[in-house]
Structure formats: C-alpha cells, structure tokens
Image (cartoon, rainbow, N blue to C red):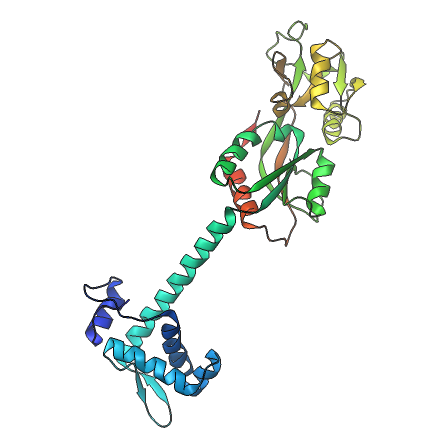
Length: 323
C-alpha cells in the first residue's frame, strides 16, 4: 500500500505503482472499500446504507484511514462530502489495489478449481486411439487429482452424450452437425485402405476407390457414420462397393483384414491402438476421402474449469491434419 504520509507521498505512489521504503500502512480491504463508497456516494449516510453499516461506524473507519495516512481525504460540509486532492489520489490507488486483489483471487480460485473435479469426454473410437492419448496424458499429468472419464463410441453416441449432458464435451465428426450443438473444428481425418502385406495391392503407393470396388471389404453397418461417408464417396464416383463382412469394432475389422478376409477403408487414426500393426495403409488416390473432426459442446452450458482447460488444450494441441 502507501509507505509515507502526506499528499506528495500518495501521489507519488499512485503514479509510480511502486511502494516506497518505510513502514507499510496498516489498512485493510474493508477500510479501502469504506473510502471508495463515501467517494462514490458523496455522502456518509448513503455510503453506510450501501455498506450495510451505521454512519458513525463508517465515519470512524474513514477517520482511521486518514490518521494512518496523515492526510484528509474528504472535505466535509453540512451539505456534502467532497474528495480532497490527496483523496482523489488515494481513491485511484485503492481502486487499483482492490481490482488487482479481485483478479488475483479469481485467478487463484480458477487454478485451484482446475486441479479438482471430474471431466467426462465422449469421443469416436478412431480419435480416441489417434492423437487423443498423448494430449490427455499431458493434461492429466498437470491435474492428477481430476477424475477423467473417456467414453468411446460411434458418432451418434457421442452426440447423444453431449446433448444429454452426460459428457462435458465430445470429439466427433462435425460436418452436418445438429443445430442444437456447437462445433469447434480441429482438423481433418483422412481415410486409408488397409491390406495385409501379402495382398496384391499392398505394394502400391496409393489405391483408387474404383480398385477397391473389385475386392471384398470388411465394413461397419450401413447406419454407421463411417460407412455412410464411404458409401457417399463411392456413389459420387458411380461405384458400388462390396461390403462382404460387417462388424461393429475396429479391432475386429483389422483382425479380419490380417486374416485375409478382405480389405477395409478406415480413418487413419483407427490403425493406432486397434491392432493395425503389420498391416499396410494405402492412401486413397485423389480426390481421396476425409472428413472434418472437431469438438462438440452444448450451447449455453458453462464448462467446469477442468473441462474448460481440456477443451483449450485440445484446440491447441490437436494436429490440424490427422493422417
């Protein structure tokens, strides 16, 4: 606070923002608020009403401040109360001190709240096995006391988890998102064809969608978002794909590909963590196939501090192109 009595010392401190050498004035937050209330109201009676205290108690508090500082802060008349020059300097300094205190307290509260609680993140399976684990590891290392629940599922499940409030936020495809949800794009997820090393196409640098129409495919059910994306690309190219074996899990799909049942068209992220090791990932020839992936939240819902911090890290750390 202030370090010397007198108007010159008050002005010097207010202008420089530094504390001079000497004893620190014994003034508290309530005393600063009392002076600010009188200055704002222009009346001890009105200020006492605002502060919910008695006028004599408020008068004693202000006089205590003036005694500590050694200056008069107010000119009192029978009709009004007016700030002195020293009072104006002190009010400016007091406002800054209280505002700094509020900001510091708010920052400390936010930091403390960010270190505890629970976060529920819903994610499509390909994202949960791609860039997400490394990002979550970095986030959780800084917040070990926060309970993190990762709900893996298909696109529709992720949307329902967020829409129903079961999940704080979700990671899924954000093209054609329902209007009741908000999307923050993260990047694009690229599709690849997956083949066992012994397959005739495995030595190719890339493969055309038309070539895949001639081979059996291990695929998801027609209602899945991944399958609909693939079928839409085939229809746009006037192709009909041979979905020979239908499964519901990436891990099962890749095991069947390894066994030679057929090839598969999958998001590249699905090859990580679902047993894609040893299989050959073939880029699709232009125009290729990709879709936007992003964060999904419920509009108007205020995220708790830990979830807000996770959302911020995902936006910052997610690779702009997943391939």
